[in-house]
Image (cartoon, rainbow, N blue to C red; front, side, top):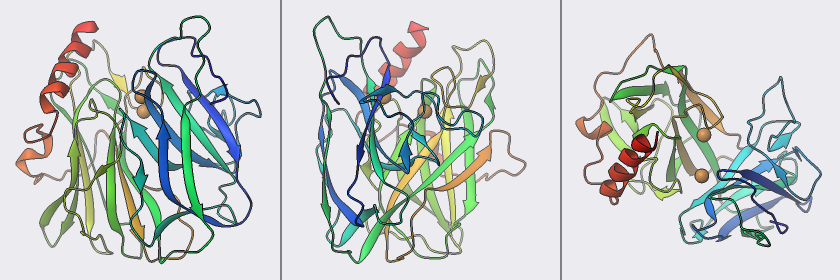
Length: 316
Ligand code: CU
Ligand code: CU
């Protein structure tokens, strides 16, 4: 961040870096940020950044109607590269795995999007960011992302509203989940993701989005997902504090229900973020989620999440 000043709490500020045009692979992410300053810090890939300024406010998702205004990327969607929160350590990808950028990937820029935790006192500036380690040697496996989520609305005054998403695994090659991330705004209590194979549910990850929204190791390391499998996610939302419908959308007044899977694969084609999204009011339902799908039990930090959730509701 080029001496950035956060003028208000929850400001989202971006800065972009042009990559060398030669095809390369990211093998390590080293964050430089502290939880005192940064609530969370994303790294996105763009064909072009939404602004040519050294830094800019970037609190909007790209939409066809408003492709540039306060967005992260212009000329195409943002591609998720990495996420950091709460003093999480650096992450080295497994041996033989890299995330392809430059060349003809459509990722010409890396953009850091930082969610500032508070407004800065006079004279204070910020230089948070990432160091990424790249190699020119193509590794055996590359990294991709698959995201489950929902659109629609959450009705008010509901202590446990389920947002379920499921789809047949949409890729025609096998993937190996490395890590997962849950993302919601203020109403998300717990989010879980599963692979279903021949009727058997296997947990990919389960966490509270009120805990730091970093990438965590998957629940079952070494698991694979292959054509024929079904993927499912559930977000439990608590809307007791709301008097009206809460829309699922990009701003902080909206809610989100996202379950990200970071995976490795032997597939050599370009990775684009694969989406598995469903309405909050699905025509079809999966009724056989495991009993703990909506539970914080057994999660490290669950008590803190519950407390934080309660205080989020009380602050309302
Ligand atoms: Cu944040
Ligand atoms: Cu969001």
